Length: 278
Length: 168
Image (tube, rainbow over all chains, first blue to last red; front, top):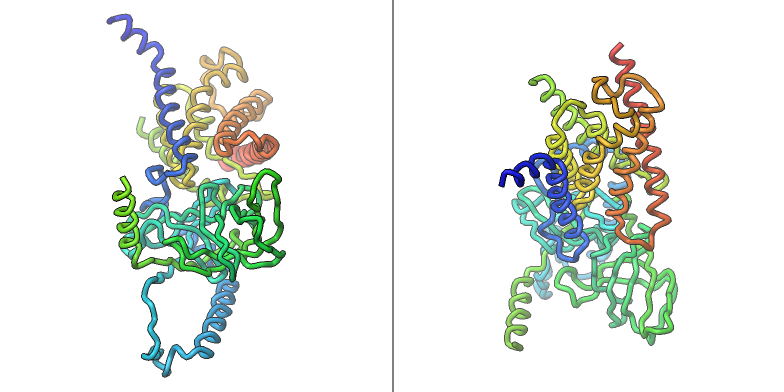
């Protein structure tokens, strides 16, 4: 017994190091696995506040560009609005003859910390549970898809960026029904990869890639990017397509969050179906 | 005791703050990011308990991991550096470093350079290898380790040079 205590006290530094090493390696490996929602994240009061203050300072440098982008988006949306017959008077009264679905709700917020130089990128946004933000909401901006909400605290949330090796977003070639999955190989911040598109599809450079309707996170037809290059492999029936993103992920500010009102119902239904199979 | 505790706490907070607000946003040539926060471990007082240093390094690494959403890569790199610090000191300054009771950044010397360079290389290697964790990217790994290390070391000497001239 005495010898054990002596051994421990003599090697305390080594033992402590081994213990801490085990903990930190566990944390590291956990990040590299697919489900990482229990990992440490920056959606907390301290890091959120610091990032927000730092962002308040640097935001002004981008303000002009940001205004320009929002004004262009407004013009585009107004053009659609006035050419359709959705509204009937100046108070944005919706035409009662139309039935407008209320499946999606949009919230607006801003990114306070952007990350794009790593292989697993996460963004931190202003707004959390208190503002109605929940895990698995879709994040987009005026140009296209940005990511998916991962961790939420009271006032902040982290977003798994489209530039993250764990991100998988259902997508399709516009105006067709050929679905595939958007992934990122970690190399270039301007390009993502679309996999699982069957080889019988006719593809041209410049074809638009949009979100597919089969996901509960994003509505259909949100732009992602354009086909840049198509790679064929001999031993597979699927293409790997390099997609040029519409978004410049290195400079994004204002974003929208999409809430699917029916997500609980859909998940419950799917769960019941799975349970019945067993 | 009190003044050194306060001193160390301030150093901890200032270095973490600078790292997450300034240095983490530097991506020189798209992939080179300096990590000068490890000056906290390298310049930690010599006469203090090693176990305490290990625990503080663990805390330091974990703080950065929380800010960066990076799991445990900074934590692993920091405790590895803290654990190897004694050997590095022996290697650079000779076995008698414990009896000299010198303060580390007293003067620029080849010993100090050896100490800094080896420490930075160990930390950055662990950090970047764990972050990529993909051996298809060996070329990128080596480039990033080398680039970031040079950047960090340059920053070290700028910072220590600045504090020295400030004291005079």
